[in-house]
Image 1 (cartoon, rainbow, N blue to C red):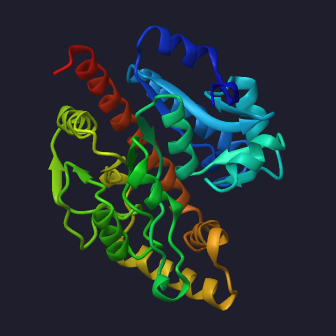
Image 2 (image 1 turned 60 degrees about the horizontal axis):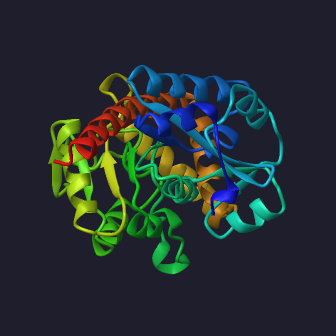
Length: 308
């Protein structure tokens, strides 16, 4: 496995010096927004992680290697390339073997982070059970990965284009804890709350770190979802965005969009229908997640060092 991993100098130094590392996905760069805005956003998120005292590790597939951390030149190249493959678990071996350029989804970022012994991962929102999944069986691979991969995912809840109720049921069945950071309700990506009450609420990063350490010390396989609501000043009006989402979902059905194409289609259509406001909210919540996730990583590193 190690022969496929290639660490940036910054991440290598962090490992030597036992500094906390925070994994970041690359699909948001390649498929989330156009160049150069995507690279600017990625650099800003990385800098937030550094400012909080942790080390960022943006993960991507390049030249037959799983890159754990990108240099500035690699980030620029990646953000400015066309035809980048969107890589999930099933795609990873082929993309690596064929030396294709690949962007890691939530699922693949978790897999690669665990390979590199990184326990904290920051993203926008996780995938889940799609609306109408009782007929289509369209369920994100993110949920299965959370059940078996020992990486905590800090996110603004599940994307609100999904069936949030079924997503929560799936996570419960798989034994994946969903911890609300200073909230009792599942955030719905663009909005701070949903109708779904969470079983666990944590008031501080230290509480979350203690829970994660206890989970893994007990040998309980799998990750955890840290549900961190979008900041109030960046949140969208619930009735407004839900109406937009419903319209986008109907259009996707009419256009027979399904599977791995559905999420980028829906997010793109929502961006159009909101005149770009949804993208602004997306960027704001990712930055907020980076701050919180970095603080949890720092706290977790201290607890591991002290073995308490």
